[in-house]
Image (cartoon, rainbow, N blue to C red; front, side):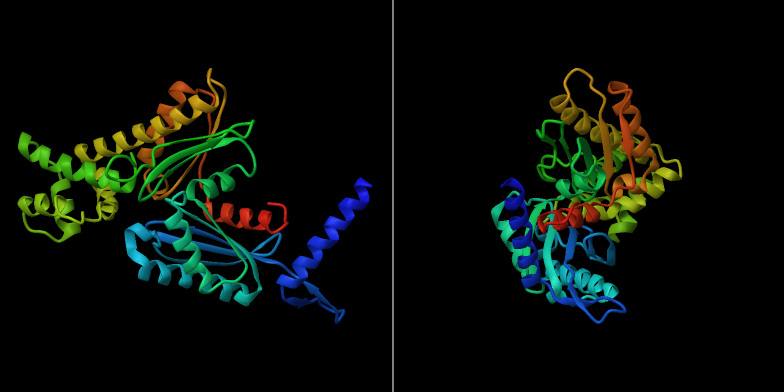
Length: 337
């Protein structure tokens, strides 16, 4: 009876899939079969990545500017999401009407208004089921598909998120740039601006002040203070490329800011690992986001600080969160992730 029930359930899933997807020709036989297509999206503050695939392969990709609603607004978020989706569909040669399921990861997805707004923007272009989850969930899936581990994201914002062998989850950070997001691009920019002005007050020399003047196209230190205290606040994360270059050139103040960033991000990872694996259990930790990707100093400080507490920690780099979003879309659509 159990086998017959399982067979009936399989048949019903196949029927539903045929109703949702468009036919594709099998080469050389003249017969039609039905192919399910899935969409994964990583909607970040500075870039939007999209991957379109079938049940096994990535067929097309797209990339546009940031689509974080709280950062760029509805019009730019729509343009970025739609642009990235269209790029992926064009590269894959797939009609968007054939998309069965979409999964998008964004910061703030736990807030109903964010979830509904993002879903509505994507639904303007794509049919089928649309699931909106946290950016940390797609990053964790990309790093450790269905398995235990911790991911630390440091992009425009930051957060640490993990899952243990019992399926229990924990997070640290990610409470917004005004009070949290330690080690993120926004945090680094704020700290650099403060450090540059503190260095001036102390009579110390640093190239950071000129870096900020150039990035914000300002003339004086007073201008920096005025812009830094303006409302709405400036885009601090836009300073990061110049801060990294200044640190690489040997500026001690800039390097100190990045040392602090790496230490803060390691602390987030420690908070999560302590909650999920008390007692020094070995843990796997992945890193993602532009801060990790572009700063060898941050990566090194993070690794050393984490391993000072967890010597056997396995650290995974080069995580692509968009592939985690695609895997979750496939899983929800009845495909193995």
